[in-house]
Amino acid sequence: QSVLTQPPSVSGAPGQRVTISCTGSRSNIGAGYDVHWYQHLPGTAPKRLIYAHSNRPSGVPDRFSGSKSGTSASLVITGLQAEDEADYYCQSYDRDLSGSVVFGGGTKLTVL
Amino acid sequence: EVQLVELGGGLVKPGGSLRLSCEATGFTFSGYTMNWVRQAPGKGLEWVSSISGRSSYIFYADSMKGRFTISRDNAKNSLYLEINSLRAEDTAVYYCAREDDRGWGLDSWGQGTLLTVSS
Image (cartoon, rainbow over all chains, first blue to last red; front, side, top):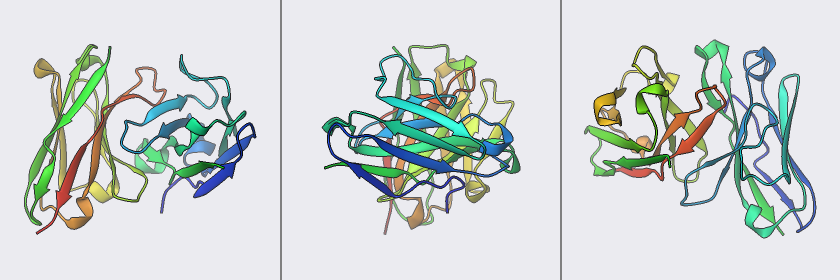
């Protein structure tokens, strides 16, 4: 059972928009800790996609955006492309776990 | 260019021990908190442990306390994870990951090393 809750799967057709939610609690996202998002393709190293709720590292397309509200965060992908098919994870920290790293359970994005 | 290369995975019998290594290049290793993250077959990413740049702060996931020991050698630009009393459920790909020095998540990851615990 992950500390952060994500839907197991989402899907969308090429060109469409999808949203992946990440629900936490008052001890993690709600406590003001930053939320980060990662993209993970099988057999490769995970890649940081969004940091501090809504910032994109250089090289990440602006089709990817993030936001946070209360005890939840969201990753939005617009203009879906086939290469976006991957697993996506949110990550934050939890004060009840001594500020340790916590991940969401991951969401498999399927591009139809 | 930041590079992280994990070494030391393989097939180990239940009850055995293993030390994983992560060799870092392309940045000032001692200036960064480093993490181990694992992914069991068919499962999601699971944070294992972190260690600050000068080893002053060490944290473990609750489920990892007792059998896992993280350490680093800044002179060798290397991160380590020792696992004792290995169990089948420790079977996973183990990644080392660098923490952004502004606390903005894990900004660089290695390709991972597969540890299989089986008799």
